[in-house]
Amino acid sequence: MAKQATSRVDKLLSSMGYGSRSEVARMAKAGGLVLDGVRLSDVTKRLPVTADLPRRMSVEGAALDPVAGLVILLNKPLGMTCSHKETGTLVYEILPERWRRRSPAISTIGRLDKQTSGLLLLTDDGDLLHRVISPKRHVKKTYRAKLARPLNGTEAALFAAGTLMLEGEEKPLAPAELQVISPCEALLTVTEGRYHQVRRMFAATGNHVEELHREALGGLTLPDGMAPGDWKLLDEAGIASIFADGSADPMHPAP
Ligand code: URA
Image (cartoon, rainbow, N blue to C red):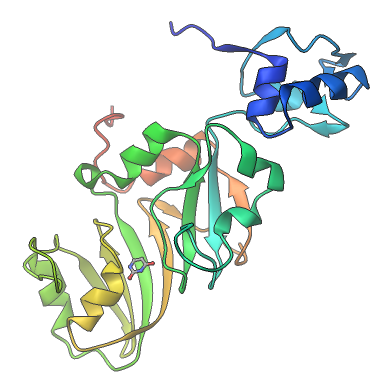
């Protein structure tokens, strides 16, 4: 059985963004840390870092934040960016301010364009991030696209063929599935994550995407009623559902 990781209290809280180790020590001295109902004053104490710590520990009267290994499901609003390289408000600003100082850092699992809304995952779990974005895993991503012009009827076969070459690229796109909703609206499911992929696919057919929203990642969808800008932590079942759409996950093969 894997050995349970332990951490000094000051190091743990500092890595969770609560402040420097000396700030955490001051907090403890002032009575701000409580573990299992008892005031915790020795911040050099080592604790097993378990997922139940937020239920057992409070910091200045509030439950401890989730420990490392968190996965966040966000309904990304239009106009926010996933990359520090782009101008605009970063999606990280939706999360509690302290979480931007966590180590390991929280990053988005793949990216959505500034003008794309919908399902976006963020995590501090590097292994999970790579499992989801790895081209070998073929995790499906489903987008709802609203188009400037009516579909011409050839798109589904073209996208499914696995031969479409995007401008400036040398490898054809993997087959993708188009479901027509109305003349100017479709659901497109792709297994890759190339730059502006969906917009470029429709551009290759002479059309233009006016609105783009990601509805699903693998078997995971946004919960009903989750408004743009809302987020929640994913539990084990939520995480497993990413790989529960037939997408391969060799790290965690089906039994
Ligand atoms: N394809 C795009 O063109 N944009 C996105 O944000 C995601 C997929």
